[in-house]
Image (cartoon, rainbow, N blue to C red; front, top):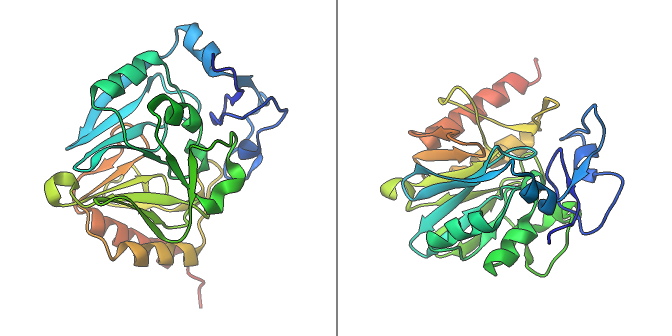
Length: 270
């Protein structure tokens, strides 16, 4: 039975009952007008509302989530890398059927999460597959359910396999991270970005925000650093946090011109 409390607004799972959700009280998220409400995985599973959703999102990339989505509603991505399957980000809902379907795809060797809004049930996922889950140490304070499976990493990059690299861009959160898969898109490269680099309706650009729901722009110095870091990588596609939120072509150029446009708009007038 998974009875650890979960915030209904953001999906964060906590180790024990509490009155408030620090993630929602932070200015990058929000407490709904209806107030703070709680649930748990056992309640969600028994409700009959949620079913597993597994769909291909691109070459070697399988979307993993639920229908409907719970809380923020993001989907994870199963990276079918040469080094083994790896899970990027975390969908809040998990049940036996979803575990079985991911296992049928070959299981996973590890998990990495872009930022605290998607930590959700990461410990449940890590335990279900007996794998580590990597989060950047700069966001340690947001972990709702500490567990030995959660592995903190530091610095700018971490190779979780010889063909998968985490890059700490610091956008949105200090530990905001993306995953670079050079073998993705049949060797042209893929960037898995969560909403650290946000795929927007205009697929010729991406967005950079400190808070998406509250419309607080990211600091120019952070965006500039992110663009400089990503200038060292090549990638054709960018996979965001939502179903079919994908930039299919010219991903590298999209990031660089988007950062240039952003910095031009936020520059002080002389």
